[in-house]
Image 1 (tube, rainbow, N blue to C red):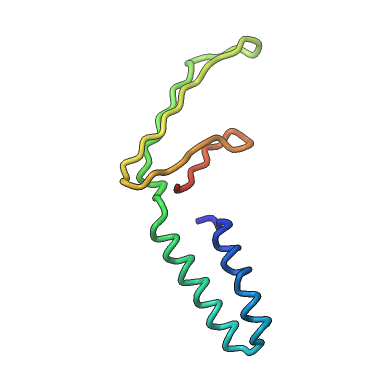
Image 2: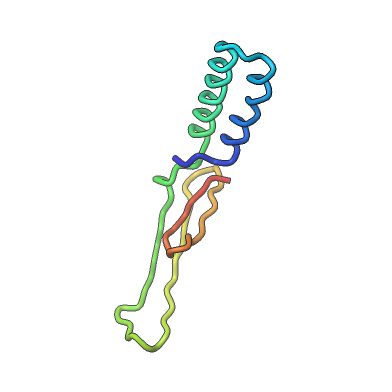
Length: 96
């Protein structure tokens, strides 16, 4: 699981109530709200285990000529998942 911008924004939104009412109870209640919201977000997220990845590459490639590879991601879920290549060529999957 990765922390998304939504979790950070929700935690930052709690600064205002904590500054307006600086008692330990405010911090505890807001922390419980953030933890509950992150748990719900994680439960509703698309599962990477339910994705089918297929990759076709040439059997042999020499150093100088270029080659082509083919990748396909299929989702067995009702929920949409976005995928793409990361900066090092790794597959990055995130729920939409």
